[in-house]
Length: 433
Image 1 (spheres, helix red, strand yellow):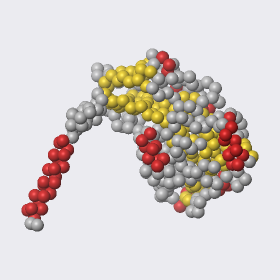
Image 2 (cartoon, one colour; image 1 turned 120 degrees about the vertical axis):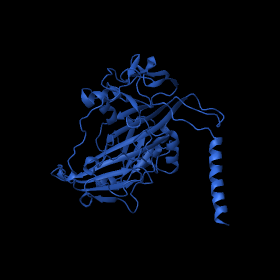
Image 3 (cartoon, one colour; image 1 turned 45 degrees about the vertical axis):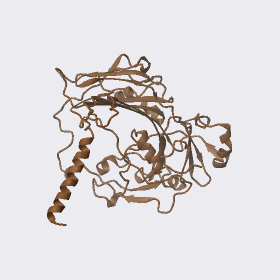
Image 4 (cartoon, helix red, strand yellow; image 1 turned 90 degrees about the vertical axis):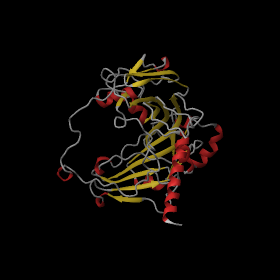
């Protein structure tokens, strides 16, 4: 084959790719994107969400339902991003709710004010007041009575450079699925914010017609048929081996679950010796979007890879070695990923060759979460009676010879500022009892 003929073949191949592309209509990005995140919290999480007050407490009280701190709470966040600048005035947008939401006629989506105040110090890291963290991180994963060979993976803080993330802590196979943000939008608005005087309530409902109107986005109209998920109720049962059985009530609309635990081993003086991190994932997944709002399609893939527990799962055993490594403090978080409703206007044409320019999209995702401090009785008295029938009593007697009821709590950043970045929560899959 001559050089000229090879060039002709390459050119012909490139032309065929172009022709194939021309046969498919190009899809333009929507002018505006809207995201709603509707959650149910219980256990310690429900109690925290009931906090009132100014500053952070005030913002949380708007995002979460108030009232009885021991009762399940609702959380709701709204984000609008647009490629347009506001018309004729400062950015303004409102979300008009159905009456069942009990938030009034509408809630304002506030745009952040621009500021010239530097958010971070310009001093070099070596001149900042940095204190190297002490101790180690012990990493466990997978459900089972005992941790398998090769665990825990130990990360020694003293051997990690300041600001350096420990290598191999987690992989990036769990995507972060948030798209709307101030950075990805020419104009952005969100709720809750300081302009709103109402909070989502424990008896609020999202079912019904919704409308979003703003001076920087097309008008959006959509009707929701999915409401807040049910509350997760948990119980724990100490095993003779030292392992702990986690049990929770099944949620009919859950697409998958994941559990995680943060623990601590402290000295008598109160200094941290070891931090313990456990995930129910059999694939050693801790970060990414596991503590975020994942779509049902993504969760289905994670269930298949045994990163997330299947929706029929209601138990997971925390290995005995995890409790032994963190005798003073163990905080457990359980997530139930939920359904999604998505809207686009105008709808996608049936013929893929038809040009399509969507004006807006709206995406509503649901989840339920709960948490407890392991070893603190009385956090969830109703746990053993929620989600269990008489037919399950025999398996309980086999798995939990000495039942002890517990409650459930949240997972925050693990390494955080000590290493120069926040660490997300963990997700899971594994074998039950």
